[in-house]
Length: 494
Ligand SMILES: [Zn+2]
Image (cartoon, rainbow, N blue to C red; front, top):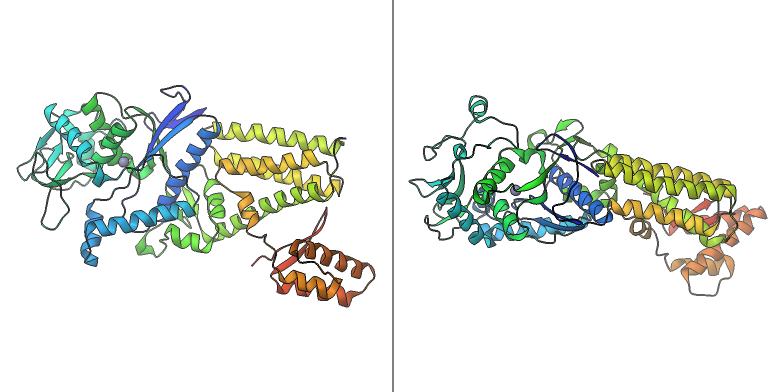
């Protein structure tokens, strides 16, 4: 299985530190606002990477932090006249809520910066003792980038070139402009904790490193995050770990590409800024996933509502195919004797399962994986229309199960999506009583009776009754769908 390691800029064979096990960490959000869809893309990418590793049989331990103390949180709290803790609690909950809506699996470990102060202080003390960090006159503690000869290796940057090229925050407390704060001395009104260096709070780069060491042990197998975190955040994380514990932080560094809107950078000033919540309020999570996974996780993702509409149709195509397969298997069971068409479909399922794994084994190529899934949909639809009521039950159900399972590896829940349209309204019973003398009380039974009555009316050219049944069904928000295996009712599309 090949995985692209950003540290060496190429794909490498995945070699777990402990056979059969993967320990991975993905930098979490700073909880001061709803997350935007660019962040969501990163979290989705690693959710699918984790799911696929689990599918391959690895025992995956996944940790993700919540940065719940930070300048952005403090600023937001001051704007709103609230405490930083209140802001952080509110947006931590909102983040978790949106992750659940998006179908992202919970991490096994979700440490929060404010509860890990001790672990961070231990690491900072170690770095000071070993000459990699120093206490400034104002009570800040800085990491000395010059003390780490490997500084810049992860991001491919040279400190001297950086100096010439990049803007650096001016701060007379630092010995070198690229030194970064491990501990920030408290300012009035800010949350703070006692420390050997006075009251203060940890720096952002410090928390991930200390948490990884505490909860997963270093080095871990995979460290992930958005491509915007490579420098300075990940460079700083790896520098601290190497200096503190003389071991790399991670074997493989993985970075998810950025998201653009209609080929433009997403920004509040361009008016094209969307939170995950806004998007999930308008579109099914499975369709948003489908859209995002149509692009490889490292490539820039072009997001637009037109493309999202396209993903809704594609999702519909998938769920309808699975429903039609199950419907065909239920309504016209045929067991045992395989026709040529049955054999062709069986072979298509085998090939799809193999090709899906080949794609995903190549650095989690979800775009390739989805192409395989849609290829199988085409084969299934062809089979259904050609077999016309003569589908073999085991083959048909196996094809449906394969589609559901492959999508599930990507976190796309087809059965759940299909069920949204189920749950027939009870009013069907009254309609069936009126047009088909139905005297039972089961909406599903009533639906079948109505469909039969409609069919009979049509064959007798009794158009008045056939149309009245169709209209009555339409008023209940349903439509009649003619499938190769017979007519059935489904929810009307908006
Ligand atoms: Zn981090």
